[in-house]
Length: 236
Ligand code: HEC
Image (cartoon, rainbow, N blue to C red; front, side, top):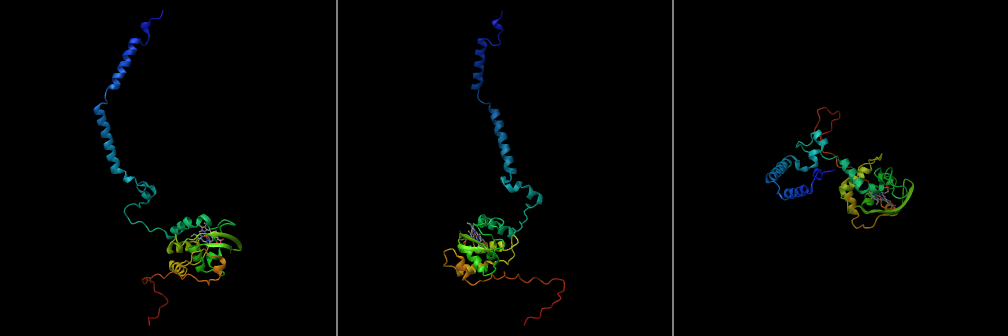
């Protein structure tokens, strides 16, 4: 025979338990516990404030830390070639492609292009005009035909940016042509101030070709210790 008193929880005990839990739930949070939690949060906050380095990515950049670059020494000037490459990627690379090969039938190549290198009838002035105002209609590049539209960049890019991009495309991917100076870009911009429409190949062919003057010579370096075999004559 089973004894009801032996059951794990009698109805009376169950009632007591419910009552007990209800009492516990009504009890307010212990004040001392609240104080401890707040103290821990305060100390933790102070620690982060003092040691987070403003949560700047540079603080935790392991490469910089390893190179010891962040010790207050002046940063090295950015490589001008990297800046030119970035300008090219941002403004030209989408069509002419990062490798300068363009897209057959749609975007002409800059690699080996007589337009870029200033060969045949093409002059540096034509190249600058193409970038300033755009190009449209039938053209030939390296013997292949294109008939598309290139948007103008004169309103977006400054003279020195255009000079940097053109100097870059003339010396990248095996291209080898002298730099384009920003003074030359400024000169062509001035000559074509009234121009709004994109150029056509036919129009450009009628404009005599010009070459960008080489950049101004570096200031004369101080005399070196090794004697120069050639003595320059005294100035008149
Ligand atoms: C929206 C696409 C597009 C962008 C961006 C673009 N071009 Fe072009 N580019 C063209 C097209 C299309 C042509 C050919 C136009 C035609 O068929 O008349 C062309 C032609 C040229 C040419 C003459 C042909 C050749 O391949 O040598 C040069 C040089 C040139 N672009 C340079 C640039 C430079 C530099 C930039 C960046 C400042 C640039 N382009 C940005 C589409 C673009």
